[in-house]
Length: 248
Length: 326
Image (cartoon, rainbow over all chains, first blue to last red; front, side):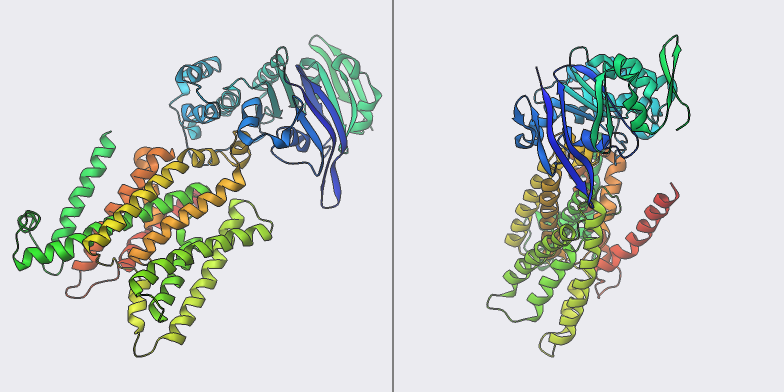
């Protein structure tokens, strides 16, 4: 089982700390939503956890090994990173894109690629070029590219932000469901989705962890209101609680 | 498969047409006789001068295409061109020095050597400058390359004015700078063939990683590519390919820009098929352009670079317009 943990991370840019002595144990499995106001350091933290950027100080350990000592290929096999925006520079087909994602895993055959295409309902799209795909189809292709090797850690940065509500629900449910067997850490802007689908919620504010706990508990935590600088009204609905900002 | 067969057939046809073309036109029958070992003066002229020149043009074209495809892949910009990145400018500066300054070695060695060093040095400088300036992305490199190309061009002009005298005519330098295939000996052609094959092999080694880079730097990184190192390596490989082309063909514009585009229409954007297809397209384009350069204004020869610029300029403008509109 993979354990991912960050210890005492600091990232400063232009004299401002984006991530400020942040420690966070993400454990082995579970679905974790990272929430927080703009500039809280959510995306920065996610990129650090994915090994895409290096912290100024502090360390990230993956199964006890320092993430910085792993090669880019070793990292890429165990950590899947779903970016907020993705736009390939060349107009490849959906099948070619998924194949590129599969390339980081040695010996992943055509059968595995076909399986991934099928499980993301991409069979009919395999030969379609990126430029001809709709927003929802693109989202599915990107998911298939990242999940093709079934990485033990999935880090997703607001993957559904540009999608319509139906696709956003689908994606949130899918990412959270991965937490049953693996580790799924997702930056979520929509607090309702975060509390409805994810087991654990981590609130970031000013580059620090402001609150961290099971979603059901944290929902009623004062620190949530403080981090966002508003007063939330918790409205019970059939689908769970809905947070409505009600004054400052 | 049909595309490859078609490209090869067109290249063969272009080679035959080009071997016949010249201020003294030959027929395919003349060509056949010469290839069959006929020893008449006409056949010997064809075999010793025209055929090696035509083959050299094809190889230089292939190299130019490859260099362009590698640079477009690295910079993920379909408008990237070796000439925008300083490598061709560096090669030209090195060659100008070889042509104008008496050195301890014969020019046949110093010219390719200094062209290689110039291209390599300019590219290393471009990477260095963009790193120092804090620009690690493709746009930063491209801008550093544009600045470098301008400086190198000015240096070259200064050298041409300061160093040329009655003994080394400016015309020699000018005709080289404007682009023109040197007619090689058969052994020289062998060297060029080996270099071209090595360059094709080198570029194919980059193919999969160029595809990854095309996903954007973040995705490429998350898929296991060491982006910074790969860009530096691929730029070097690209500038070596360009230097080889420049050493044998002078400054020939727009082939490196246009060939990858044409190849992308034919085989798609994945680099493994794209690179060899681009080499074939470049070979066809330069073979025909060189034939025009030799045959259009007999007995004079138009510099090859002028032919490709006249044909390629409008192509570039068309691409630019399409890109701006979309």
